[in-house]
Image (cartoon, rainbow over all chains, first blue to last red):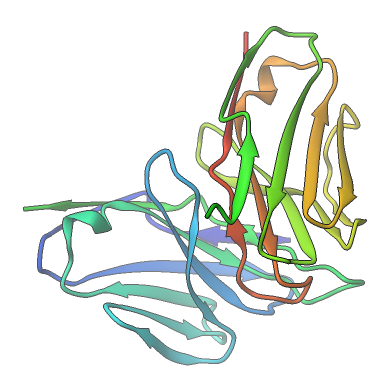
Amino acid sequence: GQNIDQPTEMTATEGAIVQINCTYQTSGFNGLFWYQQHAGEAPTFLSYNVLDGLEEKGRFSSFLSRSKGYSYLLLKELQMKDSASYLCAVRPPFSGGYNKLIFGAGTRLAVHP
Amino acid sequence: DTAVSQTPKYLVTQMGNDKSIKCEQNLGHDTMYWYKQDSKKFLKIMFSYNNKELIINETVPNRFSPKSPDKAHLNLHINSLELGDSAVYFCASSQDWQSYEQYFGPGTRLTVT
């Protein structure tokens, strides 16, 4: 089975850096994803990691350690618009034409002035 | 231009009714998905179609029946609605069944009274 854990809520200050952690236990692994979801809106894709290490994309970076079942999303130079939920998702190995994402409950980030 | 669109955005109905939600994508993608996001914000895969063929069918009551008339459309019909069906339903699409990025529609908030 799959189990994905991430903190429920976090707060941070505008201009600061915040790290959102995600741990997972899965019976197989074929990639880890981060999605951003503003309240009342659709999730939007942020990042994808399948190999260990850091992937940087502008102010956002995502890290993966497969041996530890651990990932984090790093947000730099926080802006008020970064207030949103951040969803960690794991993809199990492909099986018979499957491409399924298993989502965690999400971390609600509040950015304050 | 809207990439993934859903109608209606809001749906309020009584228990026992039958309702449909429609989804269309204009991205030329081969694969489409239905997700359910409950009150605890868990986003769970329900179904996936690839080129009009069903490839993912999670443990969903058979009151839920997806239909894909062509690869740009994926509709969801729900029979005999129950209180527990109240949730936000998201449609999504990806280039193909292996693609790591999924594009989500705006969601349909279903309230069953």
